[in-house]
Length: 139
Image (cartoon, rainbow, N blue to C red; front, side, top):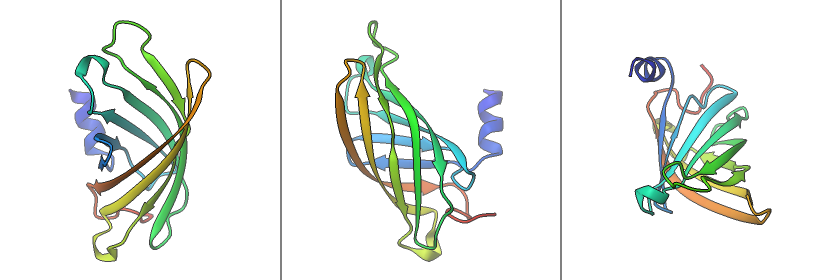
């Protein structure tokens, strides 16, 4: 609990709601590297996929920011074959309201490599709220 409290106290956090029924939590996007966790809530808890990504954030522009990363999708509560696939997320975060940059639109395309060596492509779209007044800007 103390670790989580310290983590939240010293870093910018974001919450993303995706149209696919997924929820994302991300760490400080004004830094070059951040962590992104996704929870795919449109399935039972027993088989619910979760995803952890390390994200590289490019220099933000006035109305957008690009990022790319690498990660893994897994189902930790499933009793067998917990690894689902490896993922390479590529995303664009758009800041349509310049006075409220803590609200942004996020779109992501991600090639997926399954544990069966199959390839797939995933698209997600969502709305992000960042709990910091300097969202999308360098401090």
